[in-house]
Image 1 (tube, rainbow, N blue to C red):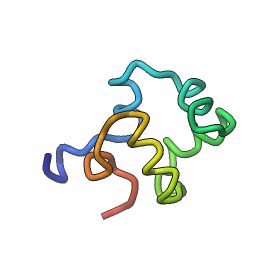
Image 2 (spheres, rainbow, N blue to C red):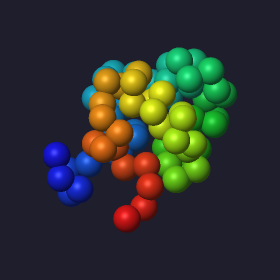
Image 3 (cartoon, rainbow, N blue to C red):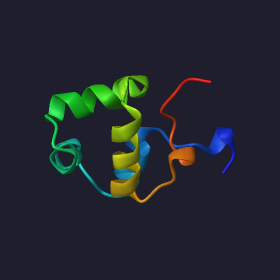
Image 4 (cartoon, rainbow, N blue to C red):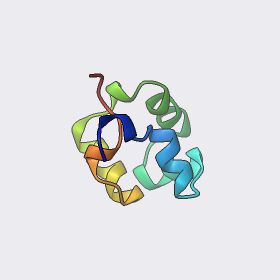
Length: 68
């Protein structure tokens, strides 16, 4: 997957059929926190980004977390 084919956090979550509330529960954060992360993925820590990728079963290289 090249840079143009990377997924947004929202699209990766939706491809797995998960709601924001379900992701928040799995990550042990409030739903508002997770919703904020979808709007501003650069605010996610590397540790949480890795945790998100594990839940979504997607490589960190395939989701856009940081601006280029």
